[in-house]
Structures are given as structure tokens and as C-alpha cells.
Figure 1 (cartoon, rainbow, N blue to C red):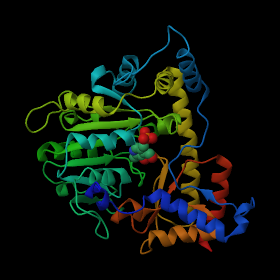
Figure 2 (figure 1 turned 45 degrees about the vertical axis):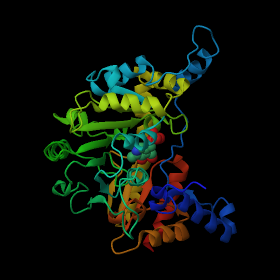
Figure 3 (figure 1 turned 180 degrees about the horizontal axis):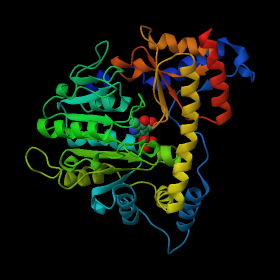
Length: 406
Ligand code: PLP
């Protein structure tokens, strides 16, 4: 029989979120009162959106579906995406700085993060912020970029600690030469958003060291402080050292609809001078047949002035949840980061094991969080609270958190 890909054997068993779901089921099975309204478990764990898609954007989706049933409106494969959508993304998010063929429409940021690895092949140095969104490391290991799991991290992946002490921004002196560096701002899980100066330092370090930054801006719609950059391309010089992935999942509630985009500037070149943009068109055209047309019509509506307003309203709703959670934790004296320009609150429990804190909050408050250690070694001693939830659930969870203080 054919042999298993050894890279699969290298990834750590059990993805974080299925493990949380397993523990939740186990808890419910041993606590029958979780079936009652008072005893029910409330999830502030995963980053899945909960609120309905707002009307203008939803109409865009419905009308898009309707078009497919007409001779004039029907469309088939769209390869890198509708030209109208690609242009609109450039105009709305990047002041028109990118040509349509630098904007690639995807079925989501996560999917493109996984596929992007194909551009670089096995054995390249990979660096991540620690803690980080799991697909950066797991995707890299699957692509053969590193050896297996060794207790606190993968061999061959550079973990750049992001801690309270360094303001959740890594020491860039530790960035390896010619590496692929995944950087996420606003950050999942820490909720920290990099300042203009910090991103300036990141671009400078990447250019000096020949690193390519994959900048994940999936939460840029949550930035409310006008001084904070929403894209790495707001920084001079980023065009020849960065790729940006983004998504309609979190600002428009498209987690189930599936639509994202990736910017690959034409000026970005490999060490041999070849065009990364041309390769991405070739690679993604080979293994991806384009995003759903219906989703793309929804995204076009999301980029109308009314759609942009609705996305802002939806993000504001979740940010209000975040403010409630953050206030409840701070009242208990628990140190927190994030929650202001991000839907995540990173709560510190120094000296504790993250899974123990997870279990304590589940046991005492019946609230699900995400253990920080699941995002990397520097996440130990933290849990992440997600602001994606219905308001009454968030309010109830915040009231229950008071039990942690007793
Ligand atoms: N990037 C980050 C940092 C995320 O937290 C998530 C989802 O939670 C994604 C990307 C996934 O985005 P998409 O739904 O577009 O695949």
C-alpha cells in the first residue's frame, strides 16, 4: 500500500478546537444540569461569527443567486474572481493602489494561507509570532517546512515570543534570514494591533533579512483607532516584501459563506528575480477554481457604501461584546490585552497552566474559553475570550465570570 506523507505524521495530534469541543461534550455528559437554562454552557471560545448578515449585504447574496437562474446573469468559473470585485477591493481597502490582477479572490483567508505554502516548497525557514493562529505552523509543517512536534513547539519553526513585556510585538532581531514570516494584526489570539512604527520596523527588518511577510489582516475591520494601520501596504516598502491575506468572514459574517482575498504585488520578487504574482496566478489557477459567484456578489454588495456601513456596524456590535468581557475581567483584576481594536481578549493567569484555567472557568462559570497554550508556547498562562456571541449570552457569561473572584 502507498506510504503516508511523513509531514502528516509530523503535525501535532488533535487540532485545538476539536479538542475544546471534546472537553465540552465530556463536561456536558458528566453534568446533566447543563441541559437547563441556568446550567447551560456558554461559548466564548471559538472565533465563529454568530449574528445575521445585515440586509444590504444579504440582498447582494440573494440577488447573486437569482442572477444564476437567468440567461443574462449566469456565470461559471471565475478563476481569480470577478474583475469588478477585484477592482472594488483595491479601491475600498487600498485607495486603488493595486491593479485587479494583484487582487486574488479566494474562498477564505485560511484556505489561501494553506495554499500559499506551495509557492515556497519544503525546507524553507518559517517564523511566527508566538502565540499565533494555528494554521501558520500546522500548514507549514504539512508543507514540509519543519520537523515534528517537540513538547513546546515544532523543530525548525522560529517562534518569536509576543508577551506582555514586549507589548505583544516580537523582537525582530530573532527573525531568521530569508524566512517566511507570518504576522497577524489585529492579532489572533492576543488581540494586540501593531502600530505604524511597529509595522515600519517589521518591513525594514523583512527587507534587510530577505524575509517575506505573510500579513494576515482578517480582523482589520475591527480597528477603531485611526492611528493604527489596517494594511501592511500602508507602510512604504511593503510592496516588495509582503503578501496580505484578508477575508469577509469577520466583518461581514461570511464565515459560512466563504470569501476572502490575497494581495500579491507585482513588485514582489523571489531571490532569483522571478515574479511571485505570476507564480501565484499559476499555482492558484492550478489547484483552485475560483470562489463561489454568489459569495462574490455578496462581497460586491458589502463594498457598496451601504455595505461598508453595515460591516462597520457588525464589527461595532462585536466590539461592544469585547468591551463587556474585558470590563468583567478587569473588575476581577485579571490582566487583559486586546478587545479594543480586536474581537479577542487575551487574559493572563501568570504561573497557571492554560488548560487548568480553561477547566476552572468551565467548571465554575460554565463558560468556554480557548487555552492560550494551544496557540504556541508563549500562550501558556493565558486564555483567549472571543467576543463572537449573542449579546444576552455575553452578558450572562460576564455575570458568571464574577464567580472567579470568589
Ligand atoms: N486568519 C485569522 C487570524 C483568523 O483568526 C481566521 C479565522 O478565525 C482566519 C484567518 C480565517 O478566515 P477565513 O474564514 O476567511 O478562512
